[in-house]
Image 1 (cartoon, rainbow, N blue to C red):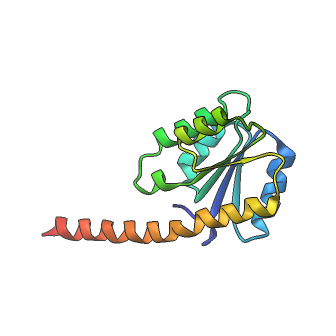
Image 2: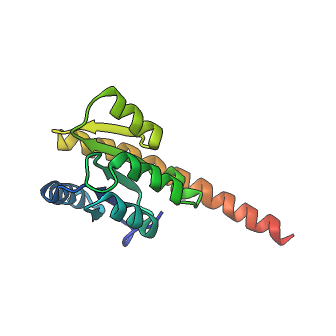
Length: 151
């Protein structure tokens, strides 16, 4: 995954500007770097360029919705590490069908608006921390492959 001066990168995909700003403040105050996208397609493109450590995505957006955004991110990211980027849906939609569609599209969790910012912060912390172990394991595997190819 990418990082900005050693900080974790969180990509927020939501068409609600005040919410993006609130989330930016919440996560930057906790030492994360925050990228934001106002549409699903912008979020897909930023996820490819940035390889964030975690993505927070709304479902209800103009253009492609959050479910399709999640599908496209999973389909377009091709590196081994990128398939482990946690995608957390943060949305006003709360039916079982919405939750199932999000999980099937590649989201790992689902939080309904209105939400408790501290609960969201804890979920984000929970999902970002294990990624360090994944990245270290993958780096070791890459070194082993490179070493074995030299022989």
